Length: 53
Image 1 (cartoon, helix red, strand yellow):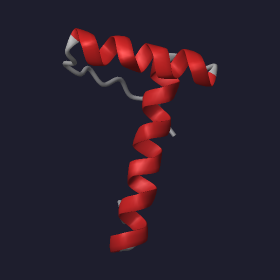
Image 2: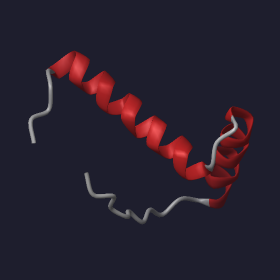
Image 3: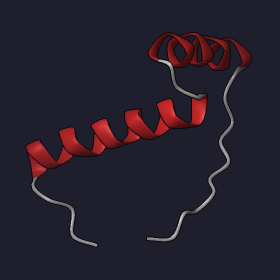
């Protein structure tokens, strides 16, 4: 699987809070975002069925 890059706009307060959560979990902000995205996809698929690509 190829790794792609994604740029997002995020306000400073939210970014700072993300760093606090990531540090608490022992992760980088990038890793924390990937976990949050994965969890959101899993939750969606539980409700709506597997996403076929």
